[in-house]
Image: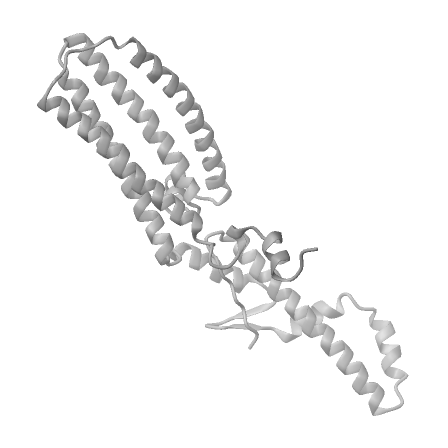
Length: 270
C-alpha cells in the first residue's frame, strides 16, 4: 500500500508539480538551439565545402523522390497546424501573425515554424537541384544549401528568442491589460479602482436572490432574545462571505478564460 509522499508523487505527473511549469519552454529552447547548431551548421558546411571543392553531378532521381515525399508529408502537417492555429487566433479575435508572435504556448511556434521551414526548404532544395541538373553547374546546389541554412537560422533564432523571453518573464500587452480592466469595470460585483473593491450591497443582493425572504422575515419576527438575533446574523454573515469567495473565484476564472496569456490572478478583498 502506497501512502503519504509516494502516493502524491504517483498521482501527479512530474510536469504538473511545482518547479516544472517552465519545462515546455526549456524543451522548445533546446529544439531551437538544435536547429541552429545542427540544421544550419550542416547546411552551411555543405554549401561552403561545395564552393571550395565542387563535385561532379550525380544521379538526382533518388533526391527528387525523397524531396517529393518530404513535401507531401510536411505540407500536410503544415496545413493542419495552420488551420488549427487560425481557429485559435479567430477565437481570441487576433490575426494569425499576431497570435503567433504573442503565443504563450511554445508548441505553437515550434510546430508551425518548423513545418513552414521544412516546406520552404524542400522547395529551395528542389529548385536549386533542378538548376544544377539543367546547367551542370554545382554552384546552384551550394547556394541552395546556404539559403536553407540561413532559413533554419532565422527560425531557430526566433524560437530561441521567444522561449528565452517566456522563461525570463514576459510583460502583459497593453491590449490584454485593457481587456482585463474593462472586464473588472463591467462586472457589477466590482467597484474598480487601483485596487479591487467589491460592492457589499451587490454581494448581499446576490445572496438574497437565492433566499426565501418571507421565511427569513418570519424567522426574524419570531426572535425573543438577543442570542437568537446574534445567531441569525452570524449564520447569514458567514454565508454571505462564502458567496463573496465564490464571486472572487468566478471573476478570476473569467479573466483567465478571456485572457489565456494571464498566468496568475489574485484578487484580494479590501
